Amino acid sequence: MAIIAMQSASSGLRALDARLDVISNNLANVNTEGFKTSRVNFEDLLYIERAQPGAQNSNGDQKPTGFYVGLGVRVSGTQQDFTQGAPIPGTDTDMMIEGRGFFKVTVEDDLGNGGEAYTRAGNFVPNAEGTLVLANSDGRKLIPEITIPLDATGVTIDGSGQVYVTTPGNPDPTPLAEIKLSIFINPAGLTQVGSNLWVESAASGSPIEGDPGSANYGKILAKHLEGSNVDPARELIELIRTQRAFEMNSQAIRAADETLQSVAQLRR
Image 1 (cartoon, rainbow, N blue to C red):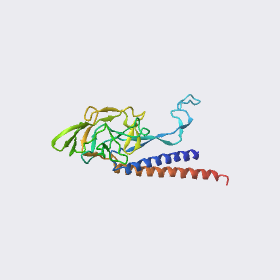
Image 2 (cartoon, rainbow, N blue to C red):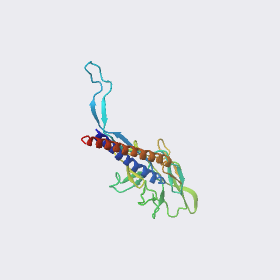
Image 3 (spheres, helix red, strand yellow):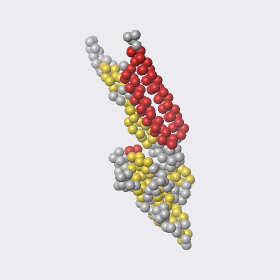
Image 4 (tube, helix red, strand yellow):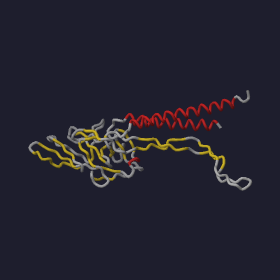
């Protein structure tokens, strides 16, 4: 019946509307440091079985195919792409992770698991006490905490995460602290909470902490930031595809409506 066609097409419109929302968010964050693009995954719905495959006729022959009518589509979830973004030159305390890993920062207990969250954005700056914090609206502290001396004249960070400072009267860099990175078995399972942050979830697995540059961990590229990995050209193509698919589903609803209208006028 045309009713099923109308309902299937309407489910397509709902799913495509969600896809449009995700594409719009990707494009909006094309210049957000450490942002990772997302895609929408779809799955088909239940089917009405009107004939089973393998059913026998009166001669004992088996039907080679069945007769199934689908009921539409739904969004099964969003999947993040953790492909590395391009490096952007920055300041002395900016850091980029070349490879796997996340910086760990402090958050409210009700936001992250144990008051901890993770980020790829390395735009760190010293606050009023000299503690390195994210240069965003909340100023999240880096874990382990690193405090730059107030009299420091320079900060150097190497690929292994070692932080060095120079002070007046001592031109040689002095070791200050060491940055740690965290990796996850399934980073796509992390929970997005905004502000360039992710928190641990049951799907992501527990964080595994290690040293930058060691096995399975990325290196630190100092004085650089990781740009967004959004590809504007690809997103615009997906936007056009989504728009055309939306129009086709609208046409299916219009065709089903015309069919119902013809049925309603049979008595005339």
